[in-house]
Image 1: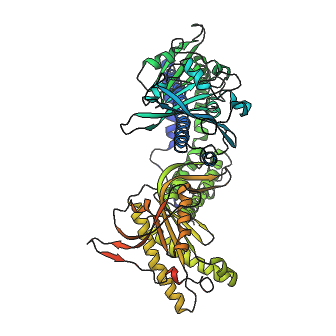
Image 2 (image 1 turned 30 degrees about the vertical axis):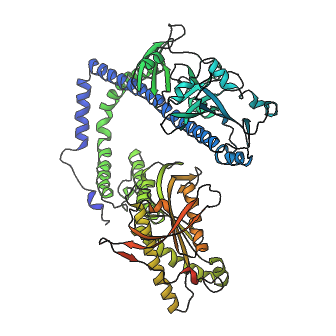
Image 3 (image 1 turned 120 degrees about the vertical axis):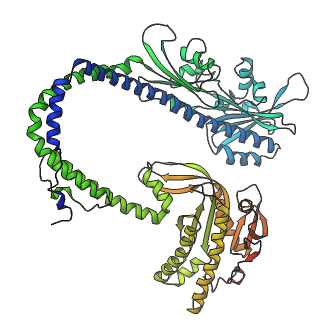
Length: 637
């Protein structure tokens, strides 16, 4: 007899069969028309509320998506504008650098201008720079390289004096941007060139007065994509803070954007309201008659209005259909239920009781139970028993998968991956990146058997993984003989201190490893470690079929290059000044060098960690018994 067979004969005081019979009788005699109407009214209210809430969620979601994209435009505008100011000389290589760091072959930003505030003159503002983007090539139209307009690609010529036209038509108030306001306007004058203007302050003087602004002209393909909706009945569009159409799926409405500030009830309400979101019911804003619409607006931080509207009949149609179906089904169920309830009650309730008891075992963590051993019926209950068994198998596999994930990513990340929806994307975090590898590993591998190489790697990785785990970090990946670790993915405190302590602990562990290898007559293992602090995107990358949880960002590349620098400086541990600044002088360090890493404009200060400061304020040195100054490529690992 199996351990769960004792539940086969379990009984309850008040059987379900009796309850079902009594409940059916009560329903047949007490269900009246008022009860049905009340239920129908509540259902109608709930359905209407749900549909209206969905429409509101559509507006809010559109506002959030638009805000993220527009802020990317603003950040890009500020970046390029700032770089134009900084790179203001006649050296053509500056524009190659600007193209690599900003446009990167993108056709999204068509042109960027820099305007400055003039101290005197008839015009308070003037254009001092103008960059035109054409795929993988950029053009400086004014004044640096003095490329004439007739040398520009045809698709870019129209953008050269576009700001003058915008200012002439009072679409854009340049004074407002010099006062600190970020502006986004639809400047689609030409039918073949849908275009948005984004203006943002770039530079201030010593008295905090804005001296320079950047104006960019952007092709709004991404914004058009987010207002396109698979639901043909629901209309989504964006309106600027003056009430004019900013982005619409119907591109002809963007070419000559309508002013909805007075005509459209919802837009008028939004412009006169301080609320971030609201709903209104109105008729067609052009005719003022005909079909009613339910519309919602949501305002983002830039003052852009996201509008979602749907015909009221679309919302009420499924409700009317559901009410008719409910009337029919209620009557049918009442008639059939009384006849059949007692026929199948006993055969139904008995296996259900068994399933309930087995569920209690599963809830206690026993996934070995099998419902099909006790329920042999060939009806829905039998299928439910099969589904129950599949569920317990799935739970057992899930438990096994969680255990495997814990080994690959650590408990915190594994829990996050299991509990959340797996999709591509990530979040921005400030982290500490760790890199370590073995010196002269390629030569070592060529001269040893694969078994000896694997044994060394397993021993080496085991030391690093355990030390990083003990100090609150996460091993992100193994790259050959290199290890990449991260601190800060779970927002823990003192991440820099934890990371450096882990490196000092690794120094001690590698000392022990090398002493043991010397005793065994083997070569010592020389390693290099590097730490850097910076912002990364942490999340899943890859494809829908294969994903990897990792961190991506410039800080990762910098940390790897810092680790590489340990070979040239003949030290085992280098950290950047960005890491030391986060430690509150808790470690003994010595500046090694200032380097300009490949592909980087800024100079990076690198420090060797000598030891730490204990609670009494004493400096405790942690020495490397096998310094890299002893490293000999001919004999060492």
